[in-house]
Image (cartoon, rainbow, N blue to C red; front, top):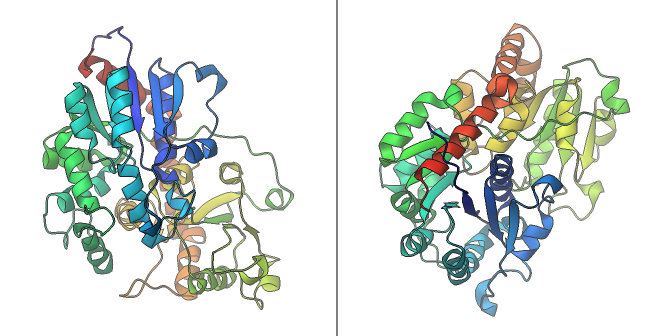
Amino acid sequence: MATNKKEVHIVMLPWSAFGHMLPFLELAIALANHGVRVSYISTPRNISRLPKIPPNLSSLIQYVTLPMPMLPNDSNLPEGAEATIDVEFDEVPFLKRAYDLLYEPVKTFISTNLPTWIISDFAAYWIPQIAEECRVQLMYFSIFNAATMCFLSQVAIGAAISQPTVGVPDYVANQSKSVMYSDKATGITDAERVSRILKGCHAIGIRSCREFEHDEIDLLQSLNNKLVVPVGMLPPAKVVHKGNQWLDRQRNGSVIYVAFGSESKLTKHQVDEIAYGLELAQLPFIWALRKPTWAIDDSQVLPPDLKNRISDKGIVCIGWAPQLEILAHPSVGGSLFHCGWASIIETMQHGHTPILLPLIHDQFINARVMVQKGFGIEVERREDGSFTRNDIAHALRRSMVGDEAEKFKARAKEAAGFFSNQKGVAERYVSDFVEFLKEHGKT
């Protein structure tokens, strides 16, 4: 493909959730490293909490701050809330209502700057209208993998979801039907948001690669009759572990890292079962556990009879932990986590075995994909989606001890080649993506 030397200017519009904003920022940094100029739109508090732009890219990436619109006092949106991490689950529709009021300031910015492309998330269902009026090319960028997008595409076009492409459990399919119903705050469903973006975009960018999802990418393209352009896994830059006295004393590949992200809110019963499951497994672990909202202080997070018994086997960090540094430590060999796509990438780029405990949204489909492709073990559950300490312990032992565990470790090491940037795989995808933007963008 011939290289077009014209400048490419991208306007990015992620949804106000850090699980969305961070992958968009990772894409912005990858594009800027190839000379692409990026205007990244979000709200003041969100931008203040995002990582600083690398100094060498400050001339190419601009944070565009648009105030989060105010809602009436009866909206149930907490004061100062700008991201999903700031609200409870039943308050998210009101956050979307405020987000939708960004239509006019976003339109003003785009009509004034006339970028080469708009790269948007699912939430801004109104962005196709802006793109058309301003005569700017629009790409929908999915932070989800292709298998999840195939499922969402079927939901968006009203197809049956009881037998989605990757075969999620019944209780997940039943929960997913809720996206078909309008909420009172916005009058539009998430399925309709996705549908309008997919219909109105010129192409679909996706955080995946053909080495992992060749058939799923082709199916997604067929379902939507739109060109799907993978950008690669966008793995975070590997960090060098700084050493840790406890981790340094453990055998290489023996430790399980446990974490469930910022969006998954564990109940007390779930925390208890995970904790007792770690005790039963009798394997070394380090658990990064955010203090749940139901706990008044740190002392109430874990069962009081358990804390001392597990102290000789593992560490529980209440609050923030340096996840990338921990994953980079040679003593870590497996990860028990919620199965968010970004966390899968971080785990797999280090060649660790994933032990999968999906809790919300796309995590269930991600878990099924990883199991079907032979890369991980999912914690067994009851028909209602519940799990026990025995289910946790069984999955941990299967993934870390014995002949079956060795097979999973070998598969994880193999996959690290395309989940990371080994052999320049990630770099090649970004380079091809930039060429696509140059060739197909309007001047």
